[in-house]
Image: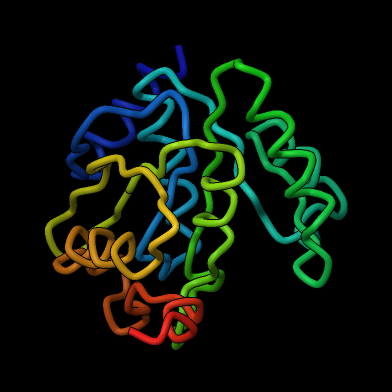
Length: 189
């Protein structure tokens, strides 16, 4: 039922889904430039028969919205203290069951200088692939690209990610953050 509903809504909104929904991994959703990004990714994943886990700032889980976010796969994240949630997610990911966690690597809908590195660190710790998902407003396409394996070479990993997102602009292109991590500065390359 959800799959058909999602297909209908996407078609009515004139968005074209691209690629296959991954079943396991840490899914990076970018560019994150609008509140509609969450809705769009959820529709595309439902269309593919997948209900993901999604890290969302804990402040949004107050009141009735919290109940709805939990039902949609939301996981509250205390951005000041993310360690316990990350440890719990790594444990869950290592259970052997299908596990797909969606993160907005930019961490905000505003233009920034760096992405948050949690997706890369979590993928390495849990030995999960990194699946790349996108939304491109100008072409009205959204979906999934390649899956990569996180290595100890953050620069090489991010070079692959940058290449994929090079032409992806988000719903509000002026708010797009270039894919780069602070950790890349520490490598000396």
